[in-house]
Length: 254
Ligand SMILES: C[S@@+](CC[C@H](N)C(=O)[O-])C[C@H]1O[C@@H](n2cnc3c(N)ncnc32)[C@H](O)[C@@H]1O
Image (cartoon, rainbow, N blue to C red; front, side):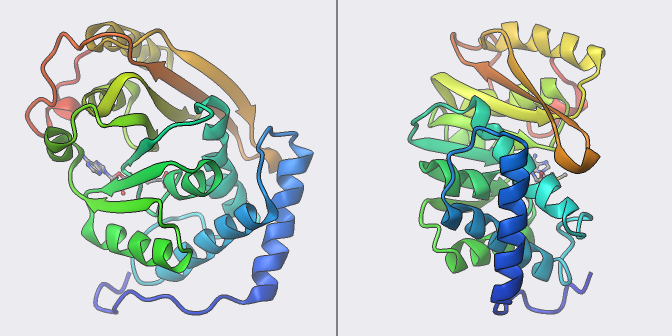
């Protein structure tokens, strides 16, 4: 990582964009995923990934840099969230967005206004550059810790997403203050451990979520399994949230 080099984007190779767009379209079609995506949506997702890989030479954003794996493990993996998303919604938050996964592909594919939040300032600056370049006016990058942002943004969101951020009980606690009644937390896991699921069920009841709804997917190219889980808010939380910053991880509710 070369932290001193200023972050900037250079022009993409159009042939590379077209080739990877075709490759991703084939992976989507062969996997029979129910995504309703235009060619331009898929192309925008590919450009996002190529910009992330450019920026990755200056700031550490991802370890997955080889094609076609990066198409599957970043873009397709992000698009799987669509399967549990409401058809329409106004405001969504991607917690711990890092290089913009799953938030940026979902903002492009599903619309709505997306807050892309991360606690690392350089990552937020990097995704601001990408959103500008892709003309994603419905994306709002925010530099903050989740627990601090939750104090200003209580019950403002219809959808909250998270990938690779924390164990389920912590994700439920992070997400709950942001969600309106009727709002949904959607997360992606590999194969969740039984212990993690049991703790999550306890936290669900304490925080006023309904029971979990899930969908299973095998990624193409033998790149693994995903369990998408969604939790709907149906009641008030019996714990006052957010708790002191850092406590959700240090002392989870279950
Ligand atoms: C493993 S990365 C995952 C990034 C992205 N969601 C993905 O799937 O590629 C986790 C990200 O969450 C951010 N993060 C961790 N704890 C956070 C917190 N309390 N508030 C905001 N961001 C946080 C980190 O800075 C990091 O970028």
